Length: 245
Image (cartoon, rainbow, N blue to C red; front, side, top):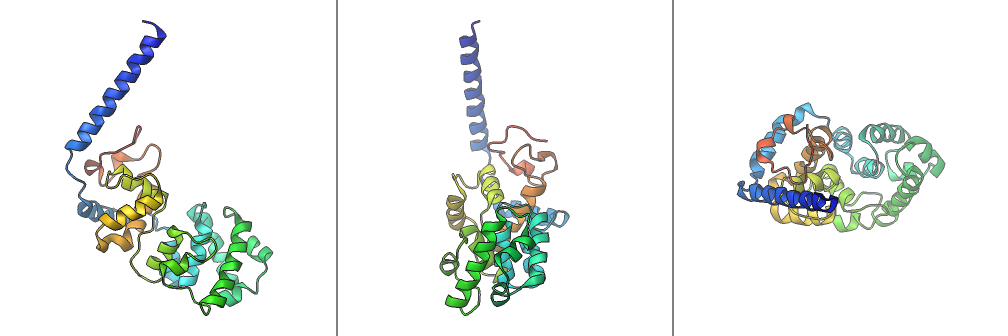
């Protein structure tokens, strides 16, 4: 058999396998999100609490939640936690933060990702809070989105963790896992948020991010997830999973 014939054969085999996977998924019953959330809740005490959630639980301060969210972007939780502790030893309110120079903040938060850019953003956010919001973090999504460096993920996390208000925070874990389950079918986190707002029962909005972030960091990794340890393995169609443990 020629190389071209072998390549064609492999492509046909892959197409056949993909079609078979789609048929299996279609035959599966619709994902029971109530059962999934119940199982994740039961397993969650054995996983690490996401760092911003931990800061929210300890401080109960929307400002610290907001700033720790900024620090957490493109940064591992252990680095974010240490940087947040160092920074909040220096300042825990906008007025105090503005007494620090950008260099002071940079030294405190290093080595978080883009630490220089984040130091400048923190100062700009603090000035905006004083100028436009009487020094208080707003509890409104649209108002939060006007702050420098605050996107929908951060704004929703501040609403849910800082104020206990309904919101759906979608990061890479929530986006990946929601699609891997087939619960949504979306291309990016923004579309995932909108799809979840339409579909996810409101009772789960506040905890959905916490559960899926901890689950994604511990079990449902992007590459080679621990399906053998997964509490929802038999409910999951494993869409897009090519290798697992």
